[in-house]
Image (cartoon, rainbow, N blue to C red; front, side, top):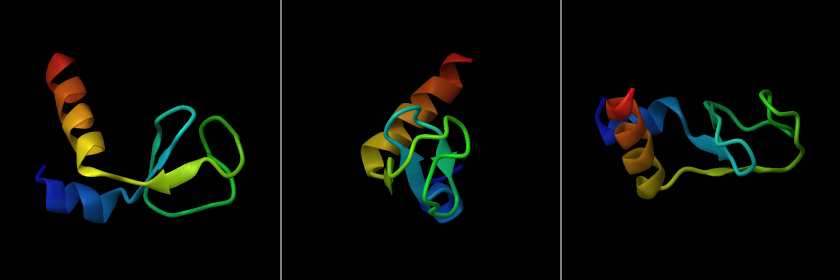
Amino acid sequence: MSYKMWKLTYQYICRKCNTLHYKVSPNCQSCGSQATLRLLKKEDYKEWKQAKKGK
């Protein structure tokens, strides 16, 4: 998946548990923490791609 397509699919990431989210919400659906979502950066994509290769 290219960076452009990845960014269109997932726009936010939780600072606490690093779960990807496709829409902003008041709390993370994975860990339940509040106000921890932030916009994704290119570095997040590189980490995701590296982790996917390692699996």
